[in-house]
Amino acid sequence: MDLDADLAMIAQQEATLQFDSFTEDDAFALGTIIRDEAMQRGFAMAIDIRLVNRPLFFFTMPGTAPDNVEWIRRKTNTCLRYLKSSYAVGRNWTKRGSGATPERGIDPMTYTGAGGAFPLRVRGAGVVGAITVSGVPERDDHMLVVRSIARFLGIGLTGLELPPEG
Image 1 (spheres, rainbow, N blue to C red):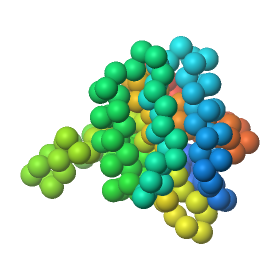
Image 2 (cartoon, helix red, strand yellow; image 1 turned 135 degrees about the horizontal axis):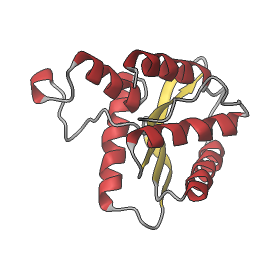
Image 3 (cartoon, rainbow, N blue to C red; image 1 turned 180 degrees about the vertical axis):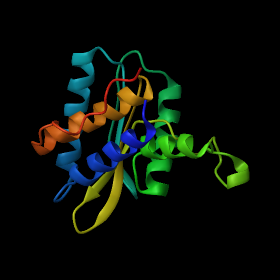
Image 4 (tube, one colour; image 1 turned 120 degrees about the horizontal axis):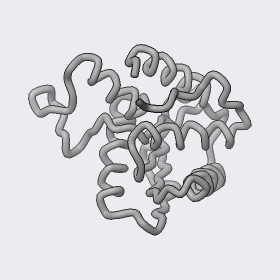
């Protein structure tokens, strides 16, 4: 995997996948799209969509575990602290040879660079929340959210997909 190519693609995803507005009904519709996409792929997922100040949608599928909820909490914290996807943060940490460490003021029990949280960015307002999933390897978590947001927004994925890991 090419870290620089991944980081450039994730930046493109974040620049493209923005909302004009975002309501409670939008959260429900997007959460349902994520659930349907996960079911179609045979994934057992925990799904969380939230504004900075309150949850809007939460769902766990059969086959998830309490740990998935903890991963969502940590991924969401990372996304909201750095205002970018948790996968971008993690790929940046990998590139720099660093990570979530107390020495850097980053508690690894509070933050993680694992993929799966994507900024809920509203044009003209900035990052107002996060869309987070947990259940499969981090690159797949990240791309599930990207695919689902693109579908919700009616945007094609051409030029927005990360290549498969490996």
